[in-house]
Amino acid sequence: MLEEIVKRQYQSLGVDEDVYEFGSEILKELEPRFEEIDKISECNHLRVMQAFQKNRVRTECFNTATGYGYDDVGRDTLEQVYADLFHGEAALVRPQITCGTHALALALMSNLRPGDELLSPVGKPYDTLEEIIGIRPSKGSLKEYGISYRQVDLKEDGSFDYENIEKALNDKTKLVTIQRSKGYATRPTLSVERIGELIAFIKERKPNVIVMVDNCYGEFVETIEPLDVGADMMVGSLIKNLGGGLAPIGGYIVGKKECVENAAYRLTSPGLGKEVGASLGVMQSFYQGLFFAPTVVASALKGAIFAANIYEKLGFDVHPNGSEPRFDIIQAVTFHKPEGLIAFCEGIQAAAPVDSYVVPEPWDMPGYDDQVIMAAGAFVQGSSIELSADGPLRSPYTAFFQGGLTWNHAKQGILMSLQKMKEKGLISL
Ligand SMILES: *Cc1c(COP(=O)(O)O)cnc(C)c1O
Image (cartoon, rainbow, N blue to C red):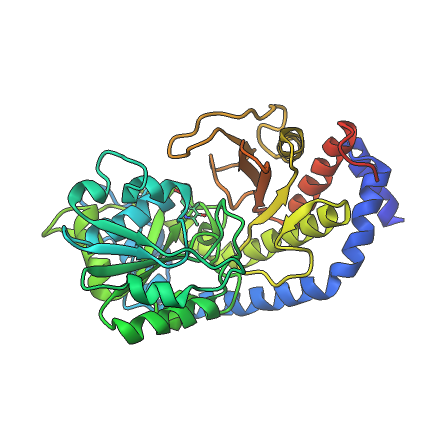
């Protein structure tokens, strides 16, 4: 009875009965996995609560600070909450860090000096990092400041190329950057455990090297985080996992005191560091977003797994596949033609709470090499912890799908993408 009502409600939003039934069949098989995700989320919720309670988060923390921001209690307490939660010595969690790319640039530029070398032992980093490093020539890149870069790709089977990593480590190597999530690549995402194995190998050979983990999209997918396995810094965006959909801006760096201090002196100014930078009234959203984050990440994960199983069944290449374990919230679906990528994104957009009536189109996005199509009808502009899909318009035409503040909405978006594919004759159910 209730099932019929729900189905009719879907129909009134344009999702046909056969599309809905196709999804329902797949969902039945996913119940055990969803239970496991809920357990991880429960564990992470408790960790968040412990950090809140230990640091006596209180109403005063939500007060608006302006001007220089000396003694901004909300900001300072939140940074201690992050440090405790992720087992770091210190944290920088600020609205003045404008996004994940900025947080990563800050961590790198403040901890490297001219003559140093940066190493990525996990292959090509995320697109926007290419300009930070100077892989693609760019104003203000590390390369312009005389900081060199070396890269060791993952092996064909996704394993670490230990032999070449050992060779790449040299006297100049000051910092090693490890990207947890696959980003826009089709390599596997690294589990925290695997990151730990890599860090152990590197630190055995070069104990003083700084290891930074680009933690974007990975937070709260597991019950441990990179600092638990020997990383010196973990870095990410607040309009992804940890902002819980509520943070309107921001980035974070958590880790060794010295690394975080270096970043703070770079963010504000030598001599000022963490002491300034008023939180301007965003603190409640930062705290409340972190409070919601474990649940939001669980919703996004369920959406990713649901999408993988649907599109796998229809014969598309999905990555990770329908049954693999998950280490980030990103789902890649490869369509092998632009029409598939575009139809998928149109479906996600049509299911959005905001801007559902617009049709997404490919555009030249700053920081990216190819044209990108993005579907995002988000409360926070560009937020990719909210249900969103994007992909570069290049072969093999892969849509990267992520987010979903609630499981209900993730499900609705995926069913709508399926509907658009069906309407354009790209699939038959
Ligand atoms: C999103 C992302 C970034 C960049 O973050 P923005 O907030 O988009 O600037 C960097 N690395 C990875 C792996 C990402 O997923």
